[in-house]
Structures are given as structure tokens and as C-alpha cells.
Image 1 (cartoon, rainbow, N blue to C red):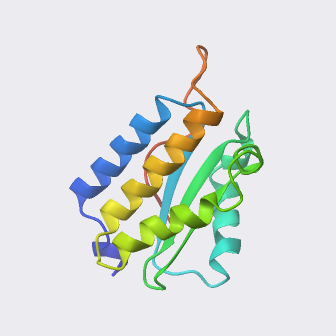
Image 2: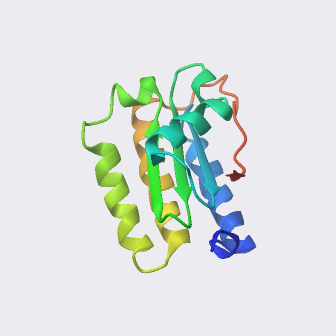
Length: 143
């Protein structure tokens, strides 16, 4: 299932959505997809977060959307900077919005929804600075 989770066109749309969201913020958004995880998904997501260098952003405002396709599990996690300013239920409500699409097999729309919602929050708390640089790749990573 992991191989056919997204088409190449879907992936291009997702990368474009990340680029569009990041144009408005100093925050960083990544999507990581793997077949399955051998631990709690949140623990694995935090591990991937560190492996991708997302914990090294200047303002601690990275957001990772982690998906274990075959396990049908996903996690959204933010670094300390963004976690400190979003409402307490933000990640849960974002996850619920994404799940509505995932339940119907529309993984692309679910991911686009998560990217859009995270991007809006990042923009409101971490607007793009004049000297902002893209600190992390926008490509989908795989495990």
C-alpha cells in the first residue's frame, strides 16, 4: 500500500502546497511517509523530526506530518516554538480535518488540508521575515 499511497502528480501538488505555505512564514513544513513503524507513531514521528533536522530551525517552528501507511496511522507534531503559541487542541483538530479525507481514501486532500492549516497558523505566529531562508527541503521524505 505504501507504494501507491500517492501518485507522482499528488506528490508534486503536496510539494507545491508546502512551498506556497512557506512563502508566507518563516516556519518549515515537512511530510514523511513510510510503510509502517515499529513503535508508537508519535515516538517515531519525533525520531524522524530529529533525523530530518527539524529541531534545528532558528525559531523552533517546524511542523512534521508523519504517515505510516500500512499501519493506517499518522501524527502531526510541531517544534517547541509553534507548540508554545497554537491553541492546545490545534494539532488534534488539524488531525481530525485530515482524517475526514483519509477515511475516504483521499490521502492527497488530507495532506493538503494539514499543510494548509499548519501554514495558516505558522503565518499568523511566524510571518515571513525579509531575510528568511528555506531551512529545510520541501520534498516528501520516506523511511
